[in-house]
Length: 101
Image (cartoon, rainbow, N blue to C red; front, side, top):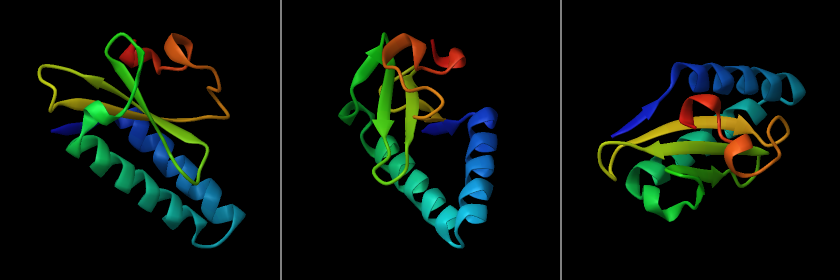
C-alpha cells in the first residue's frame, strides 16, 4: 500500500498550478507523470535505489522532480514524497525530505 503524505499532495498541487500557468495542459501532463511513477513505486518499490538508509528515490522522466519513499513495516508499504530537483539537487540524506530521514 502506498501512502502519499499531505505535504507531498500540496507540493503536487502547487507544481500543477505552476506548470498550468507556464503552458496550458502542462500541469495535467505533470500530474499524469507523477501518478504513473507512484503506480510504478507501488508495484515494485525495490526497483528504485536507496539514497539514505531505508529511503529510496524515483526520478521523474520529463519533469525535474524526484519522489522519495521509505519502506516501512513491509516491502509492500511505501511513503511517497515528491521533491523538486531544483529545490533539492543534492543526493542522499540532504536531498531526502525531513520526514523520511
